[in-house]
Image (cartoon, rainbow, N blue to C red; front, side):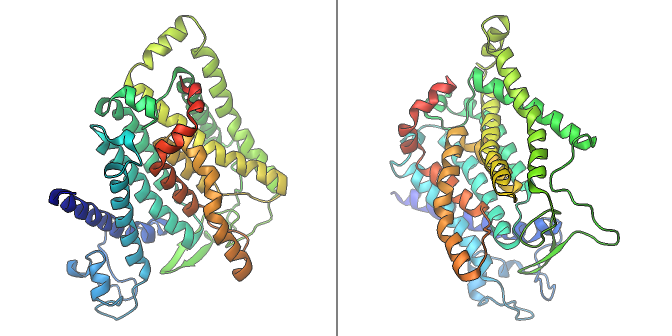
Length: 398
């Protein structure tokens, strides 16, 4: 590499470390319903505001020897780890995309846009994984942020990169008339189901009323208390009929499935409607946004199907709804094929951790978000290699 490229690598790593510093704020404040902006960073023990020179990623933690300058309270190594991890991920992805032949499809003009979308996803997933490891929850706001970025990015992608290259190499999600109709119908069905929930016609699964005089259950994280969502989890175990709760979720999903099937039947048949729909999908913004939405629904579907079928089979809650939204967000960025593959390789990453928990801590549940996130990173890097081996699946998208 030239000297300019080395400088760029250093800048990318430093940027990742700075983003990691912000992710530490997100990890601590978001599940505690605190503002991510105000007040500024302070010691959680003594409350003293942290000076700018004590807030330099990686460096300050080492210089202070992991202790607060004022009260000498220990600073968790998590801060250093998250900053370093994010910097390594940013730099590693940059090198893999642009300085190796792992993803030759990205050696094109405008590929920086794909890289930006992917680091947005990975940054959010680092924060979600940290929260999941500590508190066994995944804030849905992080998943919705990534989903919105995926839909917007895919809508713009056709104007920044060659639309035909995007489609041929599945660099960003692009809908065909079939998958676009499925996505549109599913979105309409989702709106109907959400409306039925808001009006009380449908009941939420695992909804437990708060007893009078009591608030949300509280768990102690590494640095303070945090409210947990009501429902079953490692910190509480109310007596639910789990199979009944799974049936409630199936009822919620019926309008989504029905809407997808109906839209596909109406919009893809030969005739004026079919021709109009195919013409509409010729616009990159429409094809991209619907392709991303289809990836979102596929990502949600593979996890939700596992959750519902596992709950019906074993009589207890299988996987969390946070994992559903997490993979939906991933699908909105990497597309339907890659998110399915990521879901099926994630257990290989979680197996070692699960065995350790079972034998040494006697815990049978594991936070699955981190392993889903690792799997998504793997399919991002080896996207082209995977695509060459599953290219027959792309017939459906033509």
